[in-house]
Image (cartoon, rainbow, N blue to C red; front, top):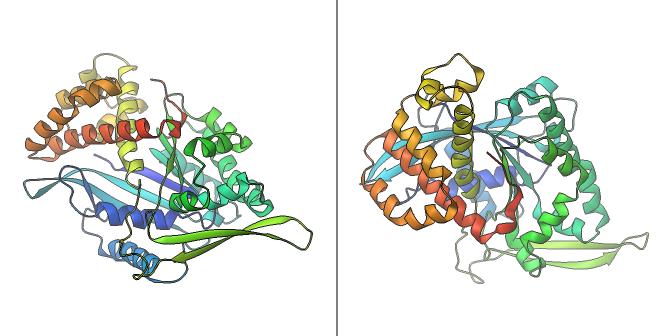
Length: 386
């Protein structure tokens, strides 16, 4: 099965690299039940260089003043992860992810060839956009510098994506906009909820244009995340006046020392984009197949049409399993939740190869996705229709 391709986009200092390192920190350890990640090369060998790099970034984040540097301007970074499921102390590979991290300044500069970016978007299964939560918060409060950031850094990236989608033959199937530093927002503006941010983001003209060009079947989410959790960083703010007499909010960040808090950093919601992407992508690929010609078995066996390329990606997963997963994902959220615990226990006990691990992973992630959307009903920017 080919990797699920994720393209990460965001303005400079939006937190893409930190998000990836926090996701790695939370998901590198085997979870039972659940899934875990393993860094790997394109050839399937362990990628210790990427593993060490992500570890260093997170260690810097929690031990040093300031924040580690992100992706260098004018460059992009690739990370590949095996997504594994552990059962009876044995790990089985269920699928893998490939992350392409574009430097923020790269998308607005002249150094990026249009065809390079367009190819990356059209080949991506998932778009993961990072938004600096504190800057969004300040922009919502009419801070002039933050409003300038929205118009000059965030909006051009949204426009660039929208322009690419306008002409793309293949469009991403799962799109998430991650609001970083959610722990800071809880300290600086505890009265604000995800609904407030959803309303603000939805009013950005570039976002409206982007949503209008997304595939009708794609769901677009707004996901609040924290790389460190709620007890590791202390933040406060003060309002000052600049030389022109305009009010400006200054945010101060200070990492708590061990005397103040013995709480270890605990990333929050960093696993949600992966959990949403797996059932999203599979559901829509199956829908594409079912809206094509003939029975599912015929479509999976055929590779003559462009739309059937996903069938080749699923090589090794037998047709009855694919059909079963399609039926599971077609259930309502309530039906899945009612049957969840019994089904997951049974599936977990039956894991013995990559196929059974994949089947379990899809069901586990669909339940995790349902739970998140139930807790955060305003996370949906656009609900896809199959």
